[in-house]
Length: 368
Ligand SMILES: *Cc1c(COP(=O)(O)O)cnc(C)c1O
Picture 1 (cartoon, rainbow, N blue to C red):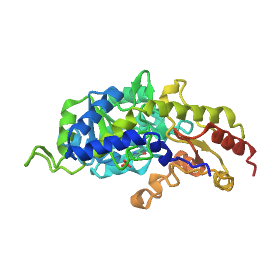
Picture 2: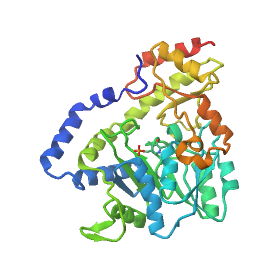
Picture 3: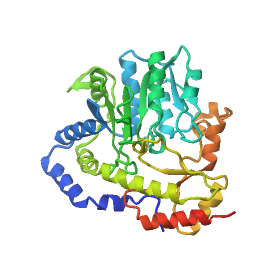
Picture 4: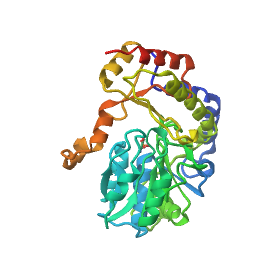
């Protein structure tokens, strides 16, 4: 079986480094909010090119807490509208509704899968306060266009960078375009911990301070609570694991690009539509390699029969989820088409190029 993503093999590459980092933490006697977190926050901010990185428990919390911090800082209030793509992973939307803000779904561009800047402006009302673009599948959204709209309408921008660590455009990385950005270090993400973890990056010191309090019971100083905060901390073990993984991230991205370019050059079945990316190679870190095929379910079954594991990102669009019953009758045709036709081929930093060749050959031999 060619696995979709071999997490065990990925972490096995760094086993000695990970084990020694883990031992260091165990032996230190300090497990929350110490030197490992400070070190990782410093290196991750530096990697993204931002002034600050604030570690939290997961990617969803990174998004929830950033919106919450803007509410605490009076930049947002309950009922304000947040523009978000209609074809994102559910977490981007949950972060909005968790704060009693109103998601306004905007359709993506069919080719890039990312929010269509031309449709953002039509969706702006007096209540719009934030644009929340998602760098879906590892490709930066059209940030120059989005930042221009945000500036003209005086909107905040919160990037969802959970799938796009290291993607860059005009030498500016994901996480350093908007007013703030949420990252996930879920094990399967391009920068993955050995458990749950997340972070926010920003250049805004007031926001960074507020987030540091919110993640820790609303407190900067022990037993002195200025907000009704939460417990959402990135612990020392995960921070230590992430420092190891971060040092290898660029090498892993290079391999992902190699795999993606092989697919792009090798797959020539007219029934399969390949993903597009910007001219600038750096804009895509290929978290997943997503093709479109009208006979998606047949293609997936055929690949499985031939020993290739694939996944669907995602089978149900947010507006068709039971959790958002009130939207079930709305129509977002581009998102619906995407969810019906997409299939994610195996890709990852340890995927063998000979396995990539096999997948390409199978794709090219696929007939109905
Ligand atoms: C994974 C992901 C998240 C949430 O991250 P968790 O760490 O799982 O909470 C948010 N947004 C997107 C687009 C994601 O892919």
